[in-house]
Length: 350
Ligand code: GGG
Image 1 (cartoon, rainbow, N blue to C red):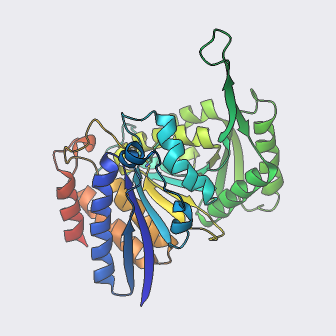
Image 2: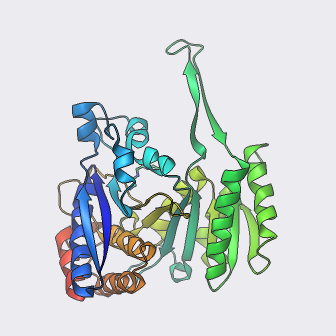
Image 3: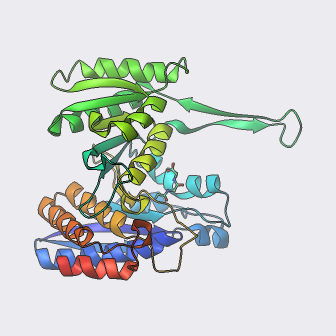
C-alpha cells in the first residue's frame, strides 16, 4: 500500500484549529479508502516559536521538509509580530525555497452557499498566481532610517524564465478545462518594464497553445468583470500581488474567505508542494471554535489530487458539497454551526 508522508504546519491562530480538523478528515478518508496511507509529522513552526527562539523555521528546517511528499499548512500571522516578519519568516521561505512557483486558487459557489452576486452561479474560475517573484521578490531596502529623508524601495522582479514557466503552467491548466480560455491580468499600461515583459512572454508562450483562447485585461478592469460578468472569466493568470488581491475578491464572491483553498505547486515535483487555506490566522475568532474548516477540506482534496489519489479527492469534495447543500454553516456563511459540527457532518457524509 502506498504511504504518503505529510508535513503538517498548523502555524498560527485558526490555522491550528482548521489543520487539526483537516488531519482528522484525511485520516478517516485514508482509513475508508484502504488504498493509501497518510503519515503525518507535525511541526510547531509558528509565531509562538519565533517569539520563544527567534526563528520560525529552525536551522536545517527546509532540508527536513524536503523528504515529505506534501506540506499541509494552516496560516501565519500574529498580533505580537509585524506581518512582514511573520510572512517572510515562515510562508514565503517555503514557497520560494521549494520553488513553488504556481499558486493555484479555484473558486466556485458550492451547493447551498449564496454568493453576494445575483450571477454567482456563473463563477467557475481558477486563478494562477505567480508565487516566487514579482512584487514579492523581497528586493529593495531602506536607508536613512527615521530621518526626514528616509527612502524605502520595493522592486518588483520579473524574470523571463520565471514569467514563462508560470504562463506555460496556466496554459496547460486552461487547456484541460472545457472552455480553454485564459485571461492575462496585467498593469503594463502604467508600468514600463516588468509587466511589459510579463505580457510579451505571455504572447510568446501563447503561440504554443493555439487551442486556448486568450484575452488581456488590466487588473482594475478585471475586478469589474468578476463582479458584473463572471462568466467571461475561466482560467486567470496574474502576478503575485495582483492574484493575491483578486483571489480574496473571488473567495468573497463565492460566499466566504472561509471556503477558499490554495495549492503552492512545484510542478516539476523536484520539491514538495504546499497546500493551505487562503485565509490567514484570523485572531479575531481564534479559540472560539467557529473557524470554517471547509477551505482546509477543499485544500486537502487538492493535496490528494496532487498525490495521485483522484478518487479520494473527489470523494472528499462530494462529502463537503453534501454538507454545504445541507447548510451546515459556520458564522462566516451565516450559520451557527461550530468548526467541529462541520467536521462531524463531513465525516458522516464520507
Ligand atoms: N494560509 C494563508 C496565510 O497564512 N496567509 C498569510 C498572509 O498574510 N499571506 C499574504 C500573502 O500570501 O500574500
